[in-house]
Length: 414
Image 1 (cartoon, rainbow, N blue to C red):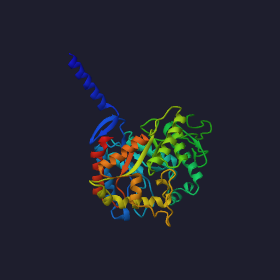
Image 2: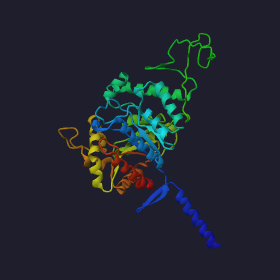
Image 3: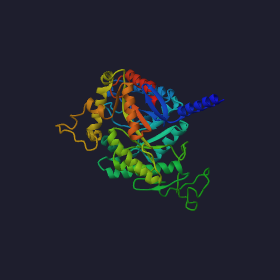
Image 4: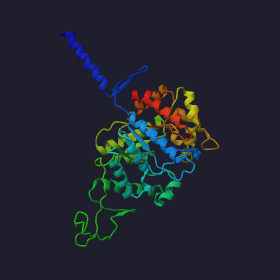
């Protein structure tokens, strides 16, 4: 009897260990002992030097998305960029692409990283995201951004001009305010610096629309409120994510209940950013918020059988893409706190594979990538990770092999 009791007790312990949320790694064996990390694919479409037809790029994106959907990835994310005749970033409308992917998948959550809402009419983007949420049965993660490239901003909406950061932020904040009103209020109105809804002094009279004080002045027939159709499936609205980098943007997002996405910085620099978000969110919510809560990190990932093979197949493409980005950003975002780089004639002279690899790249063997992600969990309590492998110039077959290796050899550890 005592032996039976001990056996049942041992079985219960093993079940508890299996179902719990922390993990530890012993050799090549992963024991599930901790919080399950949510892993998504950051699908920034590229077509370097336009060597492929756009239709072929779409087929490749669909293959990535359907593979991830069938293999337990949590999410897939699409970016918004314009005028990229160079082929560096070629998805102009992440919501339309998200709609296409929603029709081809069943489980994976579908995010935008991001919709640049300063380029959009706020009513239109609120309607489109709500419609996407309906089409996908509530699988939308609504990523939003202010924009980063002047060529895009000035030509999409002069009020979003990146040269006037203060005005761009006011436009972003007002646009987001309108979007949230449209999602959460049956009828709403708004009067601001950039937008007024409904349009002033519009008389509404229609035999099939009974007058109601809920949305109009029944005496003057002036329309006072409007509503969007449909509203989102998710209540009060789809999760909001903001692409952030500066301390002020991180703090603002936390204070306004918005999740954040970060990308380039080193672990040491990220720790400062994570703490800013944690402290601001804790203050706003008047409770202790764990570090890492509400934050997703994007990392450049390429897995191969050897470290050298990863560099050979995707290293040049990654450096090429980062050279594109750092033309505007410089190398400051890649630096550790207090670090000073040697002065060079050109601002990107130090940018090469070795410079990037040690700072923020998940490039190499599966074991190496596991080690780097474990560092992110240990140092940052990272809970949401997005990775991407379809860099400009990488062969699609090599990209898919990298994704499959990540799925089979890395994801089970987390």
